[in-house]
Image (cartoon, rainbow, N blue to C red; front, side, top):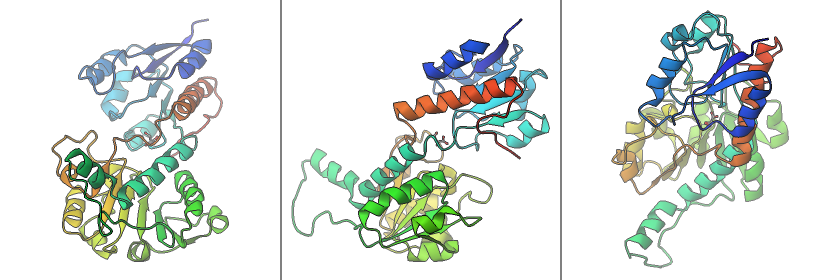
Length: 325
Ligand code: DGY
């Protein structure tokens, strides 16, 4: 019996996932990192070699023309991510392909980094480090004052798995109120003590605004010049969703003019941003390079799910985490 062929488009795919695939398929790994210039051309060159399934473990956009190159025999795709904004889902569904992702296993890792960003942005880590590095450490009782978490109102834009894990963690910080906004109510909200409110109220009342939602046509530039104006002058904005949820220019102006206190971003648009991007010049904008799910355990779990998404689909079983239209 000939084995099904699976293409893995980025060589960082963890060995644990590859081993799972090797048990029942013939996997091939494109031998480049996604930041290497050869990466996308090589994917396009390779994908037309009759693969039955693809693990799209890259931030490159999966578009209709790439799916055309893949040929009519392709059945299934899995991302190695929770987000699917880098996949043209309409093109995938139009071709009747199965697609899966890897949600939930990253909730804890991303929630941990959210708490890190909150503390870093609220307590001015970037400015503090800069003072040390510039030999300007000047202690004083009015020096480098930040914002408290205890007694604050935390507003979650999106209360999915990550948002819920963030609330569970922040309960230990004596937050006074948790608000959330989103398309639908959440059965977990009551147990977590989170109150659903309209976005405008959340922005007006929150000391911390946490963007924990996916990037969709509804959330694109949700944070813009108008919505930033609603926020408190002392507010801290955290983005662990996707960079495109925030209008960079508007955020730059708001931070520069002290319209909000600070921002902590794990995600930006575009990624990577260049080192002379205006946001990086701001002392009150703390940016890390999309590291939310970057722990060994989490990435292994994501690889395991992607591999099993593909195996299940090729065996005619439901994917572990199917993405539906
Ligand atoms: C995801 O999986 O969507 C996270 O952003 C990590 O890439």
